[in-house]
Length: 61
Image (cartoon, rainbow, N blue to C red):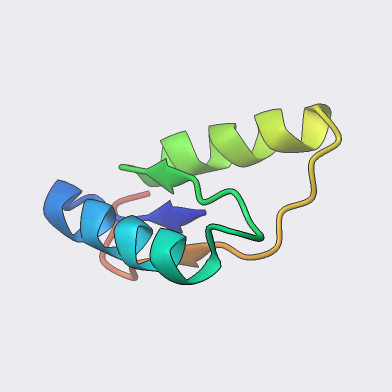
């Protein structure tokens, strides 16, 4: 999971991660802290494991 409130940065990071790790992991992108938290909650409710969350320190919330 990547979280960044700058859509360009968010897309770029997710693209790079998919190129490197997309064969083994599902890369999920969020544009806000609230969206990221919601996505992680949904994944956990489905029983999915969350390997890592990468978030910008400047993201509100």
